[in-house]
Image 1 (cartoon, chains in turn yellow, orange):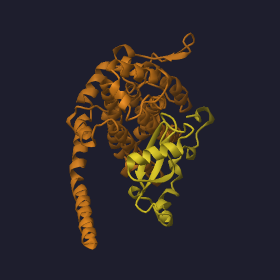
Image 2 (cartoon, one colour):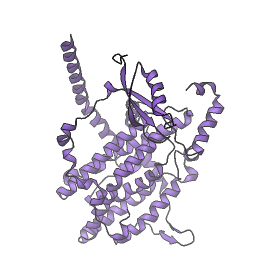
Image 3 (tube, chains in turn brown, red):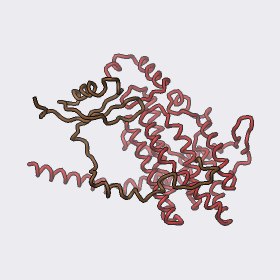
Amino acid sequence: MTQDNLHLFEVFIRSKRGLDHKHVGSLHAEDPAQALEYARDVYTRRSEGVSIWVVNSSDIHASQEDDSESFYDPMDDKPYRHATHYVLPDAVNNM
Amino acid sequence: MSDSKAMTEAELIERFQSRIDDEQKIEPKDWMPEGYRKNLIRQISQHAHSEVIGMQPEGNWITRAPTLRRKAILLAKVQDEGGHGLYLYSAAETLGVSREELIAALQSGEAKYASIFNYPTLTWADIGAIGWLVDGAAIVNQVSLQRTSYGPYARGMVRICKEESFHQRQGYEIMLALSRGNEAQRAMAQDSINRFWWPSLMMFGPHDAESAHSGQSMKWKIKRQSNDELRQKFVDQTVKQVEVLDMTLPDPDLKWNEGRGHYDFGEIDWEEFKRSMSGGGPCSRQRVAHHVKAHEEGAWVREALRAYQKKQKSQADKAAA
């Protein structure tokens, strides 16, 4: 038995209305419809979700861990993007 | 999906409303009444346009910020507003409207944005007043909208509120510095409060009794608190803040009402509000014209991106052949 011809899908589940879909894992399937059914059987056996997304793994473009220094570096020296950077009198500090 | 087809319109509406009454969120693929969809597109896109147009009055001071620190902060804030516009446009797009349609409606004047951004930023103190009062008023509204019934809008609001927390504080910090400065600086800060106070109160929209969309929006829980409730909340929280600055709000009728447990305040000049909303604000034409200009001048960037992508693709095709 081989899975050579089956596509890899990433599975995202929305556990409750109002929440984001969250990545839960992946599976092999022939097509999106089958992937949805497999995902239901594998990832929501205990009613973990109200909505499932399946996405072809090959359609996911990811940033590279190795590049992270130059990719995120400019953010490190901007403490003024955080509310805590601003020191205000106690009387109004709950702003 | 299939069960939606088997249900009658009345049953669909009933299920939709009972979800909302039950505090469940509505998600993009759910059946929803056409009015709900339209109302949301109007409100979310108006909100998105406000974020983007709001970059202009503040952007006006980036090159003239008094210190490098203030310049960096203002840049970061204006950058945030652009990001917030994007979150909101994306939320609106989940309702089946395209970005092109939304931008076209803004540029033709068919869609509105917050009238406050039609006022000019004449002095550096205006940057303080905008962060403190205008963003302060926006936050009161946005905190309430974190509980809106449409999932993508609610999630966008959570993200925006989290990022927005620095905006109001940096504005107040500017006002605090001016309030501890010399007479001219104090006068500049007070003048700015005088000009931005009433337009900030107008941001919450017409009185509940006169608000065209309010009743239905509350039933659908698109809005969670009424215009007047939110406005009152903003007034109550701002009075203390203005006292700490040792400045005043330009309203002779402002006073604590022990019986209500709130501050009473004077009547808004609704004629000015209407004028500003319908394109008669001091900078209305300039704001939209600048948006059109920036969009047109950016056309070569979009063309270059497409040309580059085409080239990449043809090279990849050649390599594969």
